[in-house]
Amino acid sequence: MAETLKRVLSRGGTAWSREENTPAAGPPLLLLGAPGSGKTTLLFAAALEAAGEGQGPVLFLTRRPLQSLPRGTGAALDPMRLQKIRFQYPPSTRELFWLLCSAHEAPGPAPSLLLLDGLEEYLAEDPEPQKAAYLTALLLDTAAHFSHRLGLGRDCGLMVALQTQEEADSGDILHLALLQRYFPAQCWLQPDAPGPGDNGLRACLEPGGLGPRTEWWVTFRSDGKMMIAPWPTQAGDPSSGKGSSSAGQP
Image (tube, rainbow, N blue to C red; front, side, top):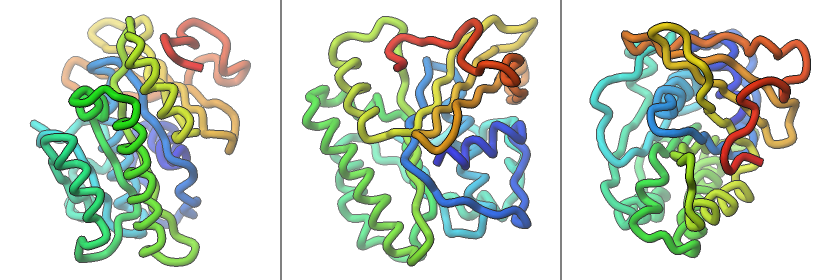
């Protein structure tokens, strides 16, 4: 899933062209950031990217309906892509468990991408590590089941967004450590010094052993539009410079 997110960030949110080759889904990805850091916007951009690949529909799980479509995604108004995104809103952990356990009974073509926004809200209902491990296993098993239905040479990607806190408690640290074991690819959204009227972030993508770390400068203008550019130090050491660390980041 790192490749899908990398394409979104590298194109500054511009829609993908079907003429390009589509790489394999890759390992599951964990998208991490503080409240308001743009996790939902990037998940939605990834959904639009996958919807344009012609590989199958996209399943987007979130606790409540989006109030509006995130801006700054190049294909946000493409009705053909939007029609391929299936939104479902399990309001509780129990409902999410039921939805994942019954995925094999769902009619229609298998999704090529499974997205979950707001994982922390489901984990907060029962903070026991066993519940987090069970939910993680269900997500991985559901993606594997969809991959099997898609057929040989086609995989269902998995991307999950988790809200992080500046001062994490022991439960949050345990959850993050567990999730990092099963989500080898990770993208951290770290606050940095914003420009006038902008909300600035540093996006650090660790592709899970499939390539080098890559970084971008992400800003959200006052009108909500997302703007993306390569991080200024990208030509040199991508891990150098301000903002390269975050609480809980490896």
